[in-house]
Structures are given as structure tokens and as C-alpha cells.
Length: 134
Figure 1: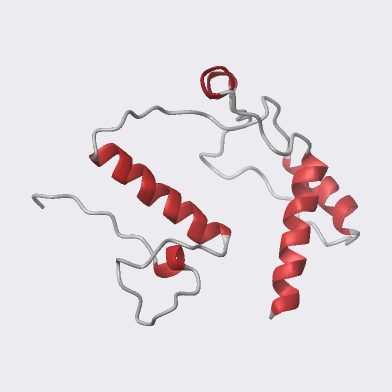
Figure 2: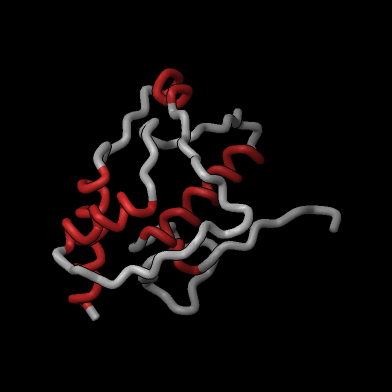
């Protein structure tokens, strides 16, 4: 392949005014999947235009175990869902925590939610809202 290309998804267009949607339609994603694809597309345009790039970890500097996440999810949702305990899968690291000091220092970035229960609550509210629309 002489020239690389990026294949994305029509989810970047949200609910377009015209179907089929063309590449000239504005990005207007309506869900996190479309938003993430739109961000990647914009980043690639930036880089192809000669823009600077950098790699940054996003995180809180604190990790959570699977059991901590399960416990917080049960608490926030009020659902006592069943849990199946298994050994760690081959290739899964025992501990993995992102150091986000670089992005905090260079871009003054701060996470919107810096608390496991707040993160789960935000995701849970979004999911309930999405399910009500169906």
C-alpha cells in the first residue's frame, strides 16, 4: 500500500441531515463511540497537516482491583449481580496504573471524575438514559 488510510465509522456523523451521508457532512457524534472516532480523525488531520504529537497517559495515579470495581458498581447501581471468580487470564498484568503526571504538567489536564464511585455513577446514569430511549 503506497498511501495509508484511516477507516472510521459513520458514527462520527451522529444523525445526519442526509442519508447516505457523505464525507463532507459535519462531525456531530451522539455517543462515546462516535466521539472517540471523531477525535482520532481530527488528530490524524492535525498530524498530516504537520502538527506536533505527544503521548500522554490519562488516569488518576491510583488503580482499582476487579473486586473493588465490582463492589463499587454494586453499591452505585443497587444491583447485587452475580460474580464468577476466576484466575487471572494469561497475559494480564497483576497491576497496571497510569502515571498521568506528564499530561497534568504539560497540558494542565485534570480528570473530570477522580473517584471510582463517581465514574461508575456517571456511566450508570448515561446507560439508564440510553436504555430509556429504546
